[in-house]
Length: 216
Image (cartoon, rainbow, N blue to C red; front, side, top):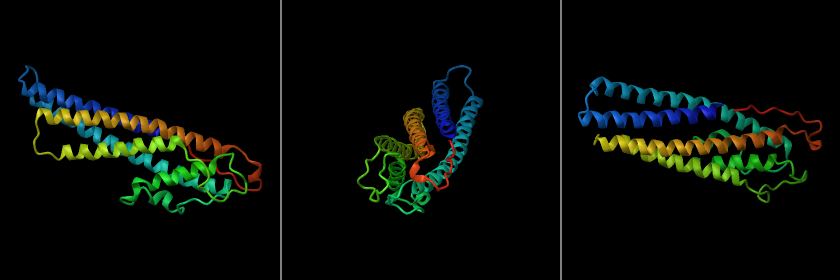
């Protein structure tokens, strides 16, 4: 649900961006009925969208990382394969500059591979297990969105505030919202698949405690 909330707040942010562009364009064109109050209202809506998006993002990241940590722990109980990253990287990989461009994907990929029900009981090396096209697609879309957000920040730092500036912001926001939506759908599928695998009892786990993973 929180992932859906992030997608919804991004769509709302896109609407506010296009609304701001429309109001500014009408104001500059001198259309009757468009006043300073309309400009302030559009600006307030944009600021509100930013804060709502930030709150939704913080909440979803917190819950997702909690799920990811538990999924990593469960995957170690389910399978004897050795993950490429230490357990601390399950959280740290997302916050370390530069390496956060690929380390998180390695973490999720290894959890996916170790959680598969068809992993042989005596399997120890993870490299021979197949990677997930679903995880790959999610991560590529996420990186593309990171780049879009970077270019969007460059635009917002511009000192040339014109009607074209607001249009550019709206276009970048639209593309970013679309990428966020696709990444969100893919991530939900990844979470559900891993959760389903880890929630399925296995004879190899007899005597081991089974830990439920939270739903997002």
